[in-house]
Image (cartoon, rainbow, N blue to C red):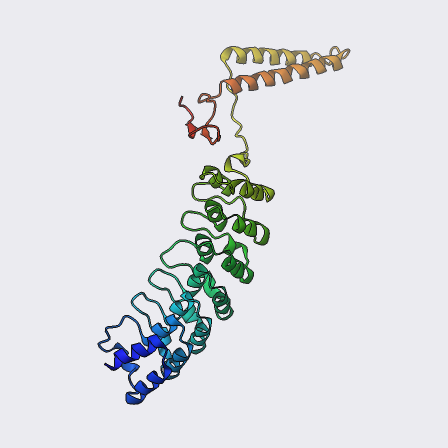
Length: 344
């Protein structure tokens, strides 16, 4: 009976009723967990509804209730944050370890800062960042991505601006989710032009980062459904050096020099001509006149022989010859066509 009255007082925010119940039984808050059929404490109820005075009165008598979890593993802080009750949030943070509360996950793997970001509770988010700035770098438990990914998924640009203003480093901004998607990839996917522009102009975002499928932001846009926002997004990306994967230069590997294999006929002919040059050179001491002319002719012949052998090896390399080996991403083709070495 007393428990029901306590929860009714919490729902209505009646501090006087709470005090009367405490006078009747000063252990009423300690007995909450004995045969309690409710899924949350009176503090959960009052925090969710923003009854500041009621929350303050409970915390004065039993501050540890701020750490209790409901059936969804939410603390009272989770509920106050989700509903944007700034003063209630401040009260809860004043009585318990801030880092502990701000890094506590609910059953969906979200801490209070994640909830503030996804709901766009900007003032609450700023307050949380004041007392526990490191909590925004804690990932979503069992989920993919960072709090910045949460902002993009829920289209909360203002929350992202607040977060980037507090922590703007390369690793944080360029973090990827389980699919290799950065926040720029996500913003382009969702056609969030203002978010794209903000990331390009105000952060250290890597414009040509690739996801798990080796797609850049421009690749993702090219494969998405067309919209009127595409032109602005392309112009913004291009102005910061964005390119498609197919347009990016492929690192050249140092060629492996192998013995040149020519046909027996060409090889024998080359040997004969080289032997002739050697014989002519041996006569230089006997007939020095015209030596410079003969030397020039000899060098020209050697150069032509080397070029001929290289050409022969080029058109008939060991192991065969194929035209190309790769995948075409030409937009004019309705589907990708792959050419594999040794196949038709």
